Structures are given as structure tokens and as C-alpha cells.
Length: 526
Image (cartoon, rainbow, N blue to C red; front, top):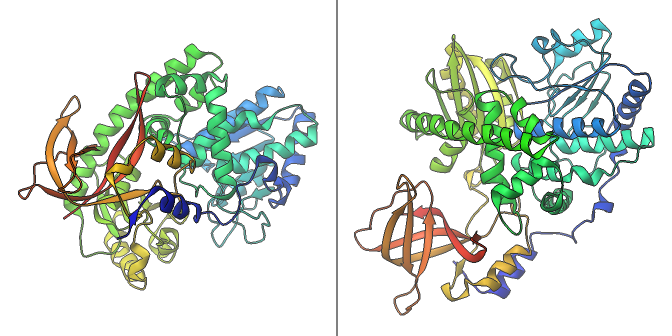
């Protein structure tokens, strides 16, 4: 493992990017998205003719953000828009026959869903409703018979950057609607919400995604949108990072759809007053606490069900809340360094979520065994699926057989340790160097460094329930300087030999207007 200094670290991080960063003006023309112009013309026609337009979103952060951007755009026209986010428990996923029962519209637009909505498209056709699908998930073998489908992952779509989220597709389409109607709307106004969606949906933070997140976080710091004001007040930082969104904001927004109804989060994003936004954010925070409890209980049970010999973990139970199975899957991936599929069973029907690792394309593995499923959809790193309880064991065996053909290297997590950093180099200059490579996230992970056989000076438990650890370490025996590493959700005891090998990340800590470096435990090595 090589030893790094600031100069070698700078060179290493610079090598992640093939070319110079794009400016907003260099984002590819939205018209390159297949059928985006045709879709924009149809939306413009509907607005001019005062037709009834209904928006159908999704209950995760990307779907909620997509819906919020469209709702806020239509407010600026202004034009009345009915916005529906399906309830996970009553309606199921996306535009569906269930949802269509309560829709009376001339035009339906989906955001972050619809690429698998074969039946819903047929019903729309029968009822004379034009259906515009905007999505970013991988298409199946059969496409819905819709008025148009806008999805960068369509084989014949010429948009040059494919790895964009649902909110980006919606935002790009709205830019064309603006052009069709000659509207005086600044599309940059929506970048605060857009950045949250890109980060939360774990899009690779390279190319245009990097540009949009970087600029979006700047907008978030200055926007007068009530939701953005509340986010700033809550985080209380001089600058907001992608990790602040990942760990503090996205889970709160997600919790509404996971446990109750995503409309709470949509109302937060689209609130007209700070007071209304505050009330919705409080609801989201309470739901997030409940989500944590529910998820911890399910994770504890799931850990006992794992077959460690499997390459793909598949676990199922009637006791697990279907709203948290995706998070439980992520926890299992972290624990076992393998893709995980977690299923919640109700009335002999299993619904679940899959999370992947490294180069393992979980969507392809699931698709290879679709004969055992009732539904599935998603992308390389995450997917959703449904099947009958009686087929779970057959599916577990089958997907592991498919995975047996993969190379062992495919399962190696991308956030591998960059090297060993001398404790003397951990200072404000290092923070500034790291900040220059923000935003960190998928495909541009925050650097992780190694401490090898460091001397453990002290371990203290912290937090209201003593569930976190603060470890004081000495990197080398000859050093007088010690460093502290925080291990969240981890209770550590003093090792017998008082030695510790671990990886950690360096982050900025702001408290009472004081800035300091904070080291966060990544992984313990035995």
C-alpha cells in the first residue's frame, strides 16, 4: 500500500476525470433525447388548448424530486396540473391500472417511472389518453405502447450521456417545453432539487452529473425556495456537500414513501411558505426516526438468515416492512461485500429490493431469471422485483447459478483505499484539497485512507444511546500526535493487542461556527 502526500493525492484524484469539467452551457441539447421534442410539442399543445394534464411520479427521492420540479415549473406558467405520487402500499409502483382508476385526464406524463407500464399504456390507449413516459430505468424486451417514451437508455436514443436520473430527464424535457411556449423561466432555479435527486439516486458524479450537482449545491445555498431555506437551516453549514444530502436530507425525503405517503415530501419541496415547509420537514424527520427503528430491527433479523456461501444474498420474511427492504439490502451489501436482495412477504406474495456492489449488474442477473418473477425493473446498482413466495428458493438458487459465471473481481467494491496518509498531513490544507474535488459520490468516491496496526490509545462511547465510538489512535510508535476517528453506529471494545487496522475518510466538521477535520471510520480489518 503506497504512502501518499498532498501532491500525490492531488494527482491521483485528478486522474479520475478524463477531460475538463463541463459548464452548464455545455450540457447536451435535450432535443437529443429520443422523442423529447415530440413530447414537448404535445405538452405545449395541451397547455394552449387548456387540456387536463396529470403527472404520475414515484415514491423515492428521485421520483418525488422529479414531480416537484414539474409542479414548480407549471406554477410558473401558471397552469393547473394534477400531481399524483402513488402510495407504495395502496397503489403499487408507478403509473398502473390502480392509479388510472382515479385519473380523468387528456394527457398523462410520468416521471421516473413507466418504462415497464405495458398494461397502463394499453388502458390509456383504450381511453383516448395520450401517455408521455419519462424514465431512466433500463427498458425490457417489450416497450409500452405510449404516445412517446423519453428514456436515455432506449437503444435508439442519441443522448450522449446515459447515466442520468429521472429528475434530469424531466428537467431536460421541461427545457424544451419552455422553448415551445417561449416562456421566461430560468431552468437553473430548479437545480437545488435536481442536485438532491442526482445524489440520492446514486448517479455517477462525473460528466454533466458532476456539473449539475456542483451548481445545484450552490443554488441550494442561496435559493429562496422555502424547502431550501429549511434544508440550509437544518444543516447549518457554510457550504453543503453531496454527503450532507446523502446522509441527512435524502433519508428524510425517502422516509415518507417508505413508511407512509410520499405526498408529504412533495408538499415539503413545493411549499409556498417557510412555515409550511418546516411543518412538512418535521413530519419527515419523525418518519425518519421510525424508519431507523424499523430498519434496524429488520436488519438484525436478516443477518441471521444470510447464507454466507451464496454469491448473491437472497433473504425473505413476513416480518419485514416493505418500505425498508432496500435499506436492509444496502446494510447486507456493506456487511458481506456481496449484492443482496431482501424480500417482504404478504399474502404469499413477495416484494423486494436489490442492491449491488462493484461491477455486478444486478438488473441483468435478475432479468436472466425473470421467468420466476411477476415483475422487475431498475438499473445496474439497484432494482425492484416481485415474485410468489413459493418461488423464492428457486429464485435464490437460480440467481446464484447466474452469478457463478461472474469473475471474482466484479464483486470488489469501488471505494477501495487509495493509500496511507501520514497523520501530520491531516490539516486544513488537506480539507481544501479534498473540497476542490467535490462533489464526491458514485464514480467519484470520497478518498479512503488506511491506518495499519495503529496503537489504540483510548475508546469512548458517545451519543445519547452510546451507540457510536470515538477512537483515539497513534499512527506510528515514534509519534506524539494522536488522531481521533468516529465510528457511527458501531460499539468498539479495546482490542487485546491495542492495535487497529482500518480505513477512514476525512471530512469537514462544522460546529458552533468552528471548522475542524473529522475522520470517519470506513471499515475495520481483522
